[in-house]
Length: 367
Ligand SMILES: Cc1ncc(COP(=O)(O)O)c(C=O)c1O
Image (cartoon, rainbow, N blue to C red):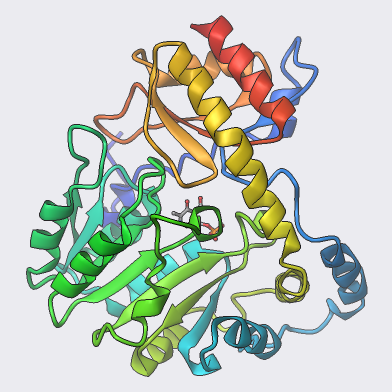
C-alpha cells in the first residue's frame, strides 16, 4: 500500500494521530481492575461548581434551538471578569478549537511558527496542516525554558509565536521578567499567542499571565484560556481568547465555525463563572498534592521537572509506553510522551489523594 492515498493533502497525511489516551470505561474492563485513577488528561477531579448542574438541567429545554453564535451572554461575563470589552474576546469549542482557528486565520504555506518543545502537540499540528514550518525551541539541559534561544527566535521575521505558559507537558514556566523579555523581543510583524490553559493553577509568586501586556504589547497578542482544566468542564468543550487587536478578533470570528460553542457549553461556562470558589478548591488540591507526588516519584530515583500545572513530567529511564501499559493493568491512566527525544518520559495529572496514592503504588510496583 502507498504511504497515503492521493486524495489526502500531504500535510494531513503526515500528521501523527493525537495521543488522547484511554477512557476510564476502557480501563475499568481490564481484568483485576477495581478502581480507575484517570490521570492522563489533566482534568479536574473535583468537577465544576455545583451551580453548573442546575444550569445545564434548565438549559435542556432549549436544545432544539441554535445557540447564540456570538455567545453574547458569556462574552459579557468574561469581559467583566477581565476588565475588557467584548470586542477583544473570542470563544472556542475548547481552546484547542481556537488554536486551529488561529492557524486558519493567519498562517500561509511556508510561514514560520516558533514554539517550545516538547509541546502540546496541537501547537505544531495545526501549523503543519496549514503548510507552515515549525521552529522548535528545546529545553535547557537542566529542564528549563531556553529563554535566550526563544528571544533570538521570536525576533526573526516569523508569522506566529505560540507556546504554553506554564508549558504542557513539562509544567515549567517563564518568570515574569523572562515573559517580558520574550514579548519585548517579538518581531514587529509577528502574532503572539500565549496558551494559558493552566493559568489558574499557576497564579501566584514567580508566574505572570501575559494579560497585563494586552494593553502595552503594541503587536497582535492572543491569550488562550480554557474551562476544561481548573473550571472542570472538559467534557463540554469551551475555551476563550483575549486579544488586544480588533482585527485579530475579527479574523478569528471569520475563521471559526459560526456555532462553535454549543448551547450547553455556553450555559455551563456562565454558571461556572458565577462561582469561582470551585477553581480555588481545584488549585488548593493541586498545591497540596503536587509536592507530595513529586517527592514520592523522586524517592524512586526518577527525575521530575518543576511544575506549575496540575501535572508532573518525569523521566522513568525506561520506555514510557511499556510502563504506561503496566500501569493500565493497575487501573492507572497516565500519558507516555510520544514526541521524539522524550520516549522515556511520562506526564501524570494530579488527582484526588486516592488517585495519586494508586498511581504511586502502581508506579513503584511497575518499576
Ligand atoms: C496547553 C494546552 N492548551 C490547550 C489545551 C486544550 O484544551 P481544551 O481544548 O480542552 O480547552 C490543552 C489540553 O490539554 C493544553 O494542555
